[in-house]
View (tube, each protein chain N blue to C red):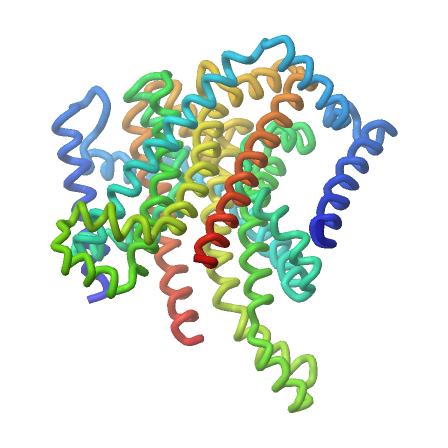
Length: 250
Length: 243
């Protein structure tokens, strides 16, 4: 391990230790924040008892649906737009302003139209995620070298064949960056929506625990989400680096 | 013809909205024209203005804190390579976690009301601003710095003539992203822990099933966010084009 990684781990460990000490010494009162060790203990008990398995499954399924839908729709839309420059130019201002719009503002509308089921949450996750995939797919497709496209023309490939055999494989690393963002945004969208209003899910349980002053449960579930999301994102980050390294060697 | 594409886009969206309205009817939607009318009524209602004020003040404070803290964190991390390498994955991890999860903690620390909203807007904006500022400073062309040393520039000259012009375009991009996220943070804050502000009105309208109100507020927020972003984007692109 290099010096950078060691320093980074040391800083994070130090921060956790500092929080632990401040909580144990009573500088931070326990009704505000509980010590990290108590959070971990409570989380362990909750996971072992299976008390929230249902909520965790519900959140993960919704996030999963949002991610898969965003990946499929994003790559399809990106590929189609690349082949239709006029539409792309018209939509360009939408791409530039998309993430400036507070997506959660649409959640009340979705709830009123579709009711308090899973659909509005998945929709928010999907809406946040899909644009990252579209933008990165376009970015990748724009970089396909002309010589590869000429080869495709020599072989008489149609638009669909060309997309699957040449354009998308070449753009894969960029598309992967889009997927990575889609995963992070889907989690943000679904869990945020669960917080605002929902009938189940991890976000729902956290706000329920907050309203009942149940700090051990609340902090355990907050810790769970943070660990889950950071683990998933870091794994994707490492995987992406390996993909890029392999491509450079090839 | 810079204005043509955005205008076509807005026109298409209004047509799409109208078509959707004709499809589903009054049960779930209102037409664009009715919504604009409702929004202008709302803006003329004296009971509505305090809510706009509340949100505007919370957002302005949160955004200001995000810019100041973001630059104070990002600029030194960009200047010190080792510290930057240590901090970057931590910042990226902070960027990608759902910050909503931390809302109960903010409420427990600050209590319900203005400070919690400001803090929530600020924590959403700080991370992207510091990431962009860090990269802006890190990517300053070292040749320029060496040239400055050869010319024996004073620190003030160096800052004014090299550091700021070189780093500004990326920093403005970061501030543009931070602006949007701080707005989202402020609204989210109002949605859970507040009795005032646009986010609170949105939640109230949702529980009352008040579609007119929801659409009018959503239109207002989207128009505001998109409008400011378009201005910042134009500024941003001009800076990048010059650089």
